[in-house]
Image (cartoon, rainbow, N blue to C red; front, side, top):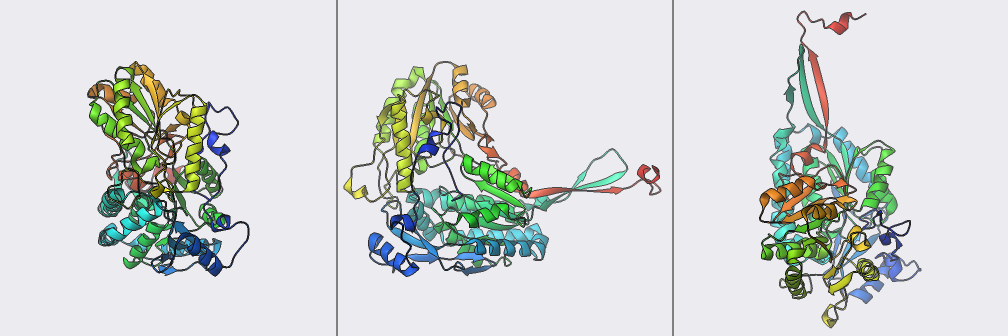
Length: 551
């Protein structure tokens, strides 16, 4: 399945492939749950319900949005979404096939080539985006509940971060269309030159499972504002809230085919978005290995590609920091969303003068986190996305111990019987970590913190840059001059000083090195979905420029 792949190559690997690629685990599919036999759809439904839930009365079914219409998959197939907090089915999703993918692309192509959307003014397109933002706010409670049930993200996070951010993103981009207006260029020649920003055409958007609503908005809102049409595929592990968003977009009454959203477990359907010559641009967020594969596939049709990929972000803590703030920020950087973030501060680079005291407080506070059902508002730390992903993270923990790191906190499945059916894992901290260790080099995509020790400024910089990734970093110090010296030396796209995780719609976001290329948010994020056209008109007196008499 095309999606996030936490596996990474690194120069310290002892084998030809990274540790993550050597971990064997299955996928959360119906056939694997029931062995190798293939059952009719109704029999699968009956067996799933008997195993995971007593009744289907409250389980919602979600359709595809294709050509302005909500409809089932052409093959009538569906697949279940499982709630990570309890392992029960929380929704059924239409399982698009390659025919549906092609229909979505055809709808977007027709809407761009012959429909009104690219020819509307930016003000008119902005009205539609504002309408979507309001519909998100009107349905905020349901969206938050769906995303919590589908992803295991805590209710506090979906309610106060994810859903509001999704709405604000549409609202923000609805107001910055004036940046797309023609610009007159100053050229030292008798010509009148205009720079125009025009839409790319049909955009394919593919996202992973960790922030479905936010990532959907980050791609849809600027792409639509720039005049493009869109075909969008969320991860099969987290499609529920995005398909609910598709219902709201359909209610916003955009012209048919402008936005097409489908869920699928079909690799062929997902690949069609990347290889189709009718798609003009790919905007992908996910794992680095998957991004490399998609870039290769997209190159065959020479389509523009933006890739927001993995990370192994450092949190550099100097002895002159505000200790309380730095401990809290460090915890948020690695344990928010159970560490399932590409910007996760998974490497704590801690100055030796405060090393022991800092770790004492950090471990104590980490052990006090309340692990529980993501839907409970007193829960601090919810489940991982799936049992398979939990096994992968556990394999990394075992590898860390094997390579000599010291496990000082967590690292196990909780023993509380109330949590037995969910995909829970204790927040984990390793000390005595060396930079060449697997847990310090590969993206684990889970709640595993590697602590590295430093003495001098230059050592901190070297450790922070000693990775193939360059997505984000934190610096904790009261000396702002020193903080900005660090920021200048770090090779990454976002650097937070005395804070973590501030994503602002006005500021671009993206990575260096194997964390990808291209930017989201801000002016840069809007312009990514445009192409430039230069219109040059001769104004030579008499109407005959030099070129007209060259021969």
